[in-house]
Length: 59
Image (tube, rainbow, N blue to C red; front, side, top):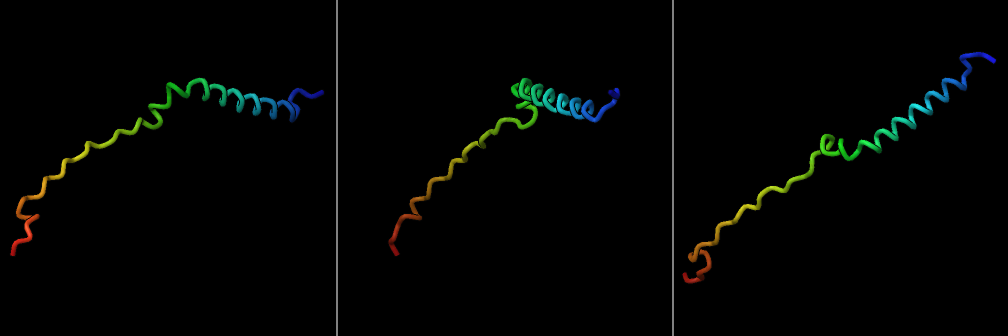
């Protein structure tokens, strides 16, 4: 039995991947605002009312 068998590296890589995924899931709530801030809608602009001359059909 050798100390640095190929299984050792594979198990370390699998453990690292699982640990990283668990840490990411556990910290997602804290990081979510830093990764993508919440969307904010722009203020709606008030359109000016049409003048009375626009609606007249007198010519």
